[in-house]
Length: 266
Image (cartoon, rainbow, N blue to C red; front, top):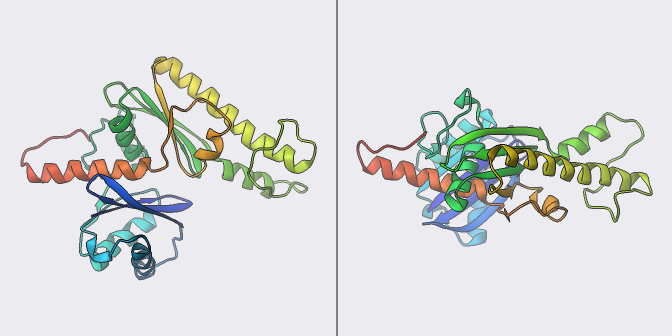
């Protein structure tokens, strides 16, 4: 079995694959103060709750945008699962050609999303990942990563509004009944959620004009379902896209290791 781990700024998302099938997933808060032993205790206690025994884990693939935790999870894999994790980064075979001006600047999670989106949907395809930031990624008809855009995420925007104003308070991030709020709470909900939806629709429209009208649009990330309910622009919502990308990249590297001289785009 493969344990896929996506280490984000807000959450660590994990999934276990039996061959190509995702059989279990978990999400936990990102905590840079946890030690390898603490994360290991947590993960090994979570696995049996969904019918997976720790000794069934044969390999680990991970992507991380939190450098302090990358080494933590590498050590965790070596000590508690007796394997060296595949860490998506420079030099990793991904099957995706990065056309960014500096390919090293592309987050590993974005590369995993691109690999999964092209593998599942073909190209051209736009991925909108609703995490701490809302990230737009463009993948060409030939599977090349063209670039993208980064905007403040919904939760980040809401927190900034609360922190930087004197009279506005935190509100539940749900859709109000109308765009015109009749009190402060619904006015904030309208501005944050409907405003974010409008931004996403405008950005997707701009991407499509540059990429071609037949471009598919896929949403992923923790807030994807909330936004999806308020717009019709998405062809699919796949909350496991990054984990699937890690599986694809792991298989590509495993197959290449079995075939000396094998090649794959980085």
